[in-house]
Image 1 (tube, protein in one colour):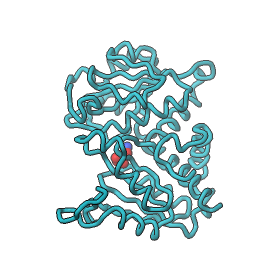
Image 2: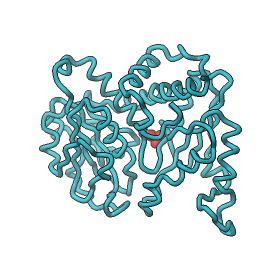
Image 3: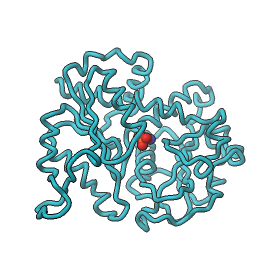
Image 4: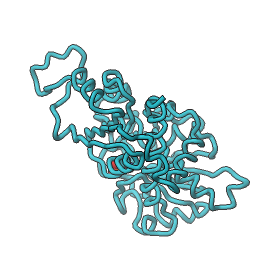
Length: 324
Ligand code: CP
């Protein structure tokens, strides 16, 4: 693997999941793989799980991680080609990225969308310039449109849960991605990415439900059943993934704040005793009720802990490519 920006960088999803689950059992089995290698984790935006799980994963592989909160501690970066830099930006990405490329063996970047300029966000203008100018493998820690480490984790968590339930020996799981309310505009990344991975995985009946106006970009939702009727979508679901996103069509806008879209035990009763997922952080009693999050059907803590094994599997694949 040369980079990890989307599911398109993955040759075999099930093999990568299997590798992650081996690391979960034997975290230090490849401790020598990353010896004498350094990984840079650049954050242009906040993070709890991604920054910690990726560091743990790197250390499990024997790598030295260095975290740089570039938004707070670095110079203000310029990304425009031909910019006359007489304003607030101090350093061009063309100058900064090759420096990272010299300091590190792998570069990981978190960069959220503006939610103001759809064209710029969906062209992935920031992470693509790091890829262009760093000259080393780049891993997305969540970019403007996608969150692939989260989606790999989600499939790991689903497969782990399926493995201990005999009903999945004879049937595909029904997996529902449901929109939930939120108080502020949230990127479409997690929903785009989960939908894209579900399509590429192809081993589930995948349904997306959201209010009118929250249609995701169709590039990511191929093969999904899409409905505005949340109750119908939840019927017989085996897994329910709850997530807010802002409108793609009316870019970055919050069009609905209907509290009836919140997932709770009453809606859980419509499902096939579904397991509940959310990538965290979650707005309790806005997106999901306490009763669900604190109840026996919640997978959210397991999901967050699986972030380590997803990151470790991905970094190991990249290290193998570097070491060849
Ligand atoms: N799910 C996730 O990416 O969490 P953080 O934003 O805390 O990293």
